[in-house]
Amino acid sequence: MQSKFRCSTFALLLLSFAFAGNTPTFAQDEGSAAQATAPAKMVLWWPELLAPADDPAVRELLNSQLDSFQASQRDVILELRLKATEGANGVLATLRAASPVAPGVLPDLALMRRADMLSAARDGLIQPLDERIAPAMRDDLFPAALELGRLNGQLYGLPWLLWLQHMAWSPQRRDRPPASFAEMLEGATRFAIPAASPALMNDLLLAQYLAAGGRLPTSTERETDADAWLHTLQFYELAREQSLLDPAVTTYGATADYVGLLLAGELDAAVIDSADWLALEAEGARLGYGPVPTADGSRTATLEGWMWVLVTDSSDRQALAAPLLDWMLTGGRQSEFARSVAMLPSRISAWELLEVSPWLEFARELLDNAVLPLTGDDEGASVNSARNALMAVLQGESDAAGATGDLLRRLAA
Image (cartoon, rainbow, N blue to C red):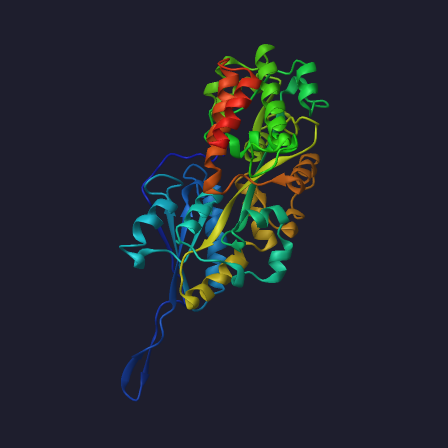
């Protein structure tokens, strides 16, 4: 995900929230001092991307929401620790490193991106949430968002902040953007995609393949799957032949690589995350929007999100952590924080508190028709093979038919 909230890596910070009334007290009993029960400490690991060093307003809001929670608790001291978003000091890597050798330093709760959540669940690093989520909250989550947190039928992640993919249109092309492959080609639409993104199959290609009639898991035995790959790759082949895609598209890994061209009108359209869209809109950019192109023009998108995960396996500590989940997902707080970081809330009630706009109605339609990125380890071949097939077409190394044939052979291997 790309957004204005990318921040430089900094040393891990420890922010402890201790409040009056939460320090241990002592009482005299028949001349002897006895220590009252000390409040329990609850540790939360938080990604620094959601507490950016260069945006004090977000940090202030986070502190305010957690301070208010702490003030409502008499038996818990909340300790927040900032972690790198990824890499060796990221939440997932630290969980993996500490679990076997230093379980005492692990948090009770953590925030993770969905891909990291799935890896953590497969590695046995986090606990199922099914028994800790009230039915009222479960019913208030968007169905697609709720599915983001599931693995093998169990809920391991509670979705909190969401983002979708769609097309952004230059100020010169804001009216009635084409939605189908044919319309894009007939309109000679110059566009960009993040072709070098390592997650491309999990985003654009997946949505387009499914919209073209493909199914998952992919199969070399279903004719509809082969046709779906072929139709999707033919679109990119024709776009390259018509010079609608900049040759540099094979180096674009993120929105930041081409958003300047879009704003300058050198591109008609580009694939963008909803987080990027909201950030650009807040900066005053006057862009249009529309769905990613598909074979039949149907509206679809892939959905991603930040997930709350439960790390502790202690039932007592899980009971202490549950109120914080309820607190942070309460409509007003969730919608307020989502706005501050240019993302979308996962609860229907929180969504309804956002300021109504045509774009928000468009995003809601995409959310209702969203597909989930691939999750299974056994689908890794699909991800890599599909990405390689697209790159072969974009680089002119193969036509769509040849790339599809190679892709199907790889999937059958």
